[in-house]
Length: 135
Image (cartoon, rainbow, N blue to C red; front, side, top):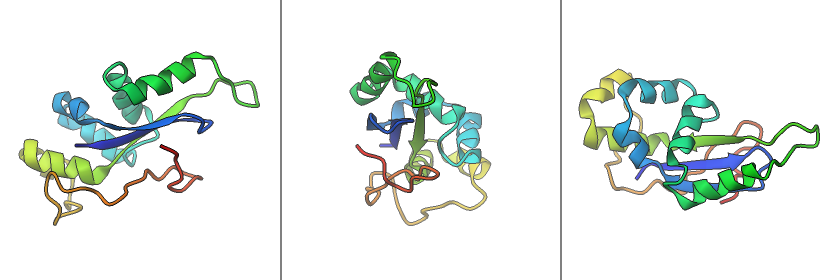
C-alpha cells in the first residue's frame, strides 16, 4: 500500500487513500518528478489525486466538495493538495520496480523497512500547517 492524502485548501475536506494503482501504471520519470517536489503539493502529486478520482470514495468525496464551487475569503476558488508517503513508495519500488531504485534515490531512505510493513502514523507535512491534516 502506498499511503497518500488529499485535502482542500480550506482544510474542510480531506481523505487518506491507497495510491498503489497510480504507481502501477506510472513511469520512473513521474516518480522522479514527485521526489523532486517533496512528494506533494504540486501538479505532479495532483495528478495522483486526479487519477484516483472515481477509483477511491474518499478522493471522490473531496472532489465533490470542490464541485460545490466553494470559495476562500478572498473570493478565489478553493483548490486541493495531494501528498504521498515516500517510505511507502520506496517499499513499493523495491518490491515491484527494483531496477528503478538507483534512478530515483541516490541513497535509499527507510532501508530497514520492507514492503508490507506499516509506516508509524504517517501524516503529510503541509508547509505552514505541520502534520495537522484531518482525516
